[in-house]
Image (cartoon, rainbow, N blue to C red; front, top):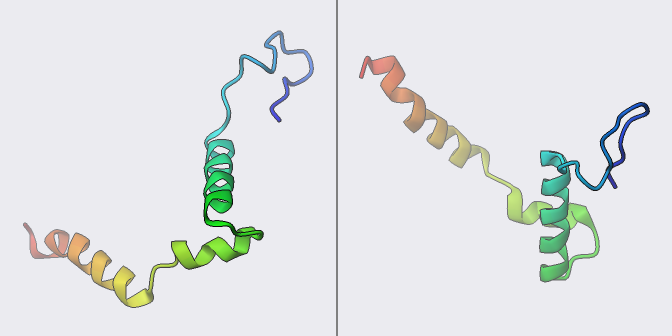
Length: 68
């Protein structure tokens, strides 16, 4: 729930959710769709192996080191 801070004339209904709030809402929807009870069980869908990460970084950064 988003609330206005003290002294603010803005009502809570007009404030936009933060990016973290939107992310949490999307994760909760995804969690419900796949039938997981715990947030931590979603980690199997978000993990990237070290080998994949290193290969991707090398591919992305190689042009910077070769002068391309």
